[in-house]
Image (cartoon, rainbow, N blue to C red):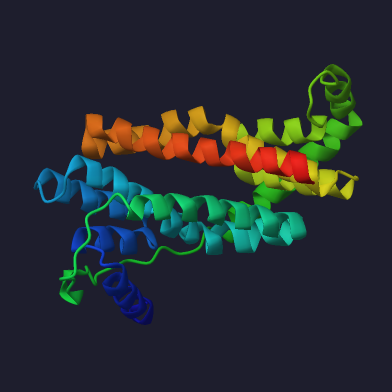
Length: 258
């Protein structure tokens, strides 16, 4: 971890990140809650302006997504979905990277960065429990086979013929509203049964889009309101709308080109 911090320190000097932006950015690689808690304290001390808070929140998009790389995408998504999982992971990282670049241009720069401004007492979160993942895998695969047996998917196909989207992709996106891991497992099941890569990707990305309001209400909004008050609503809104816009763009590209 210290080696990583040293490298990030060098990057921060090259990018001319101010100490507050850099510390929040670094903490996001470990814990997004710790990052926003630090940022909230700086904001309450009037060490950073409202506009820059929004910029830093966008800047943190890439490290917060990178944080899930070793706990979700690499051990779970890519092994289950193979090529589709790899492409889906690249899309999520790409969307986060674009948001980070936008955030970088919104924050104030500083050429007086000092390594002592970094909080060295970072607690690294462990990977998610393997047992929990196995339980989700078992229950999801069992649910898939049960739904096939009772003819649920055939029913969905018949009832959604009028929509310009494959019924399986629609099913994936609906499941994603409740649990993204289950959506990944169901996608793997559909691919095994012949679903092409295009609609598998569409289903996963569409799931991110239509689950926006659920994540907004359940997770992001309460946390940000508790830390930043009314400004928290603006932070979540800007982040979410930019993610939605980028996801829609990706969907259009996939549907047109694949």
